[in-house]
Length: 64
Image 1 (tube, one colour):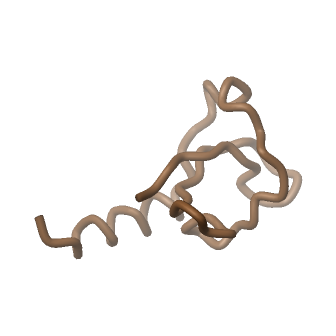
Image 2: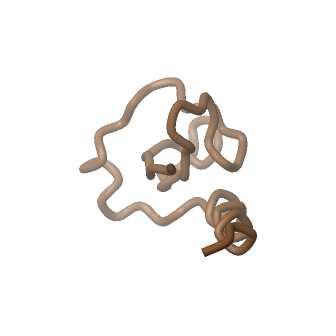
């Protein structure tokens, strides 16, 4: 199971939506989200391209 979390793209960078596996310490792109940011703060944020690419590969390799 995966969830979307708002966090900086890079340390101190713009906010993006990251993909995180439940109970994981890091996003699919390898970022450690040190603090929770309210989803409303990321309403207009784009998606993290590295997380989305990893998620796409995971979903393509998962049998239906």
